[in-house]
Length: 311
Image 1 (cartoon, rainbow, N blue to C red):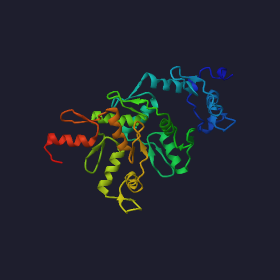
Image 2 (image 1 turned 120 degrees about the vertical axis):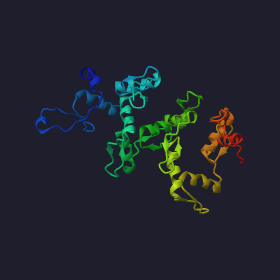
Image 3 (image 1 turned 90 degrees about the vertical axis):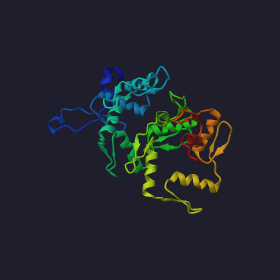
Image 4 (image 1 turned 30 degrees about the horizontal axis):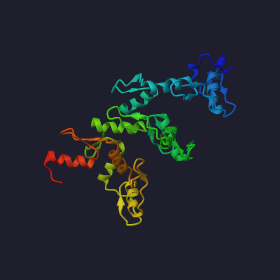
């Protein structure tokens, strides 16, 4: 029956909801209501597609990995993960995207447009989905739960990334050095080690950084603010994670374990550096002679050979 009602499902897959029409046209527009959640749609086939959320029916299956989807458009977009196809290029910077919606959101990084505003705190966003996730900070809603450890998250992508902690999956691979990552954002940051790109600039001193969070942390240097205090020794820190790491000096806690040799560390960054011993990875390159090092401190020491500086 559903197939008969939705012969041209591609045109109805947008799940377009009811909108306000001028008074003289409202009576002409038929709305189709979901008898489960009362959501309304302007097309009957959109209602049938929507109902799959309640029934859990996912009739469209990827023939490569077996993942299933509610609508055909989601499957089409998903398959681009396997093919690497990115048919939507930005006409400003040339960056390409697998979805037109991602291109639209990306272009706002060039224009600075943030049309979606939170009616609670006034914060604005370039994408509606970011606003939806943000508003859950105010409501405390975490609708996405891990079926392994029961931890809950604001957004589905956060849950997807979290689950890789349990599975060990690292689907995002660097095509330069072969290192793999569980999150695409981590791969993007990592590749800047190879390219030297530092797109985030401090508007106070002009110093540039490869990651936005590093810039945010750096700016505290200018303000001198240290709002995180150790209740054991009274020492103050500008960043919360620095306080967390410091407290482990008092407690002796080393929660980050090497899965190869079992050695434990108080900081995740120290564990990552340690793992380079096992993998042989040398991600830190000297920009003068091209030599690679497994640890940043070794690179710094090496550069003194070129500069003549005495440590």
